[in-house]
Length: 185
Image (cartoon, rainbow, N blue to C red; front, side, top):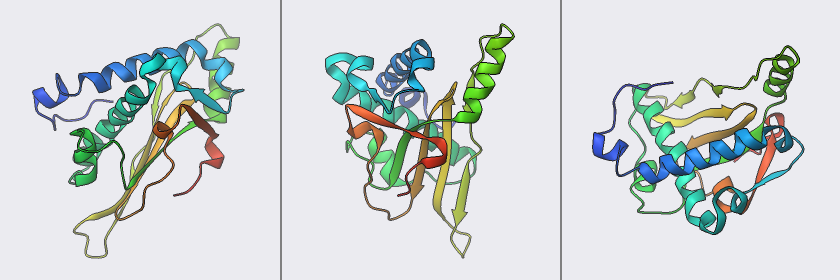
């Protein structure tokens, strides 16, 4: 999915390159380990990023926060300041956005069906964004979407005024939840 241009070239290029690099390393790991990840209850970020996992896992979260920010703007909404601060590296934790890793049984079945007929199935799956507007219709109060590589995904949920949650990027062994059992904020 390509969003309309909503970031300047410096922000979407040099400034966020380390976020993109973290995503590339993560996506390679996911594709190389796709089938074994179904049986796991976590992704060991040290296997993905080595000794730099604490920093690079936060950069990976920033990649998904950048995706969320572009989705906000593309949908006609202002990006929440907390996400901007996170992308600007003013903080290492999003106070009002929950991000979890998940595995999707339906996408796994799709992949397995394609493999049986000789096609290496996978792809990138982006869930349509959903949001809730305030009664006055002047501002967004919550917003969510998901982004999956094959059947391993990241679900993000932003809610105005929510308290910090247990997001994947806070853990070396980041939990992978079943899609139908994603914890609520």
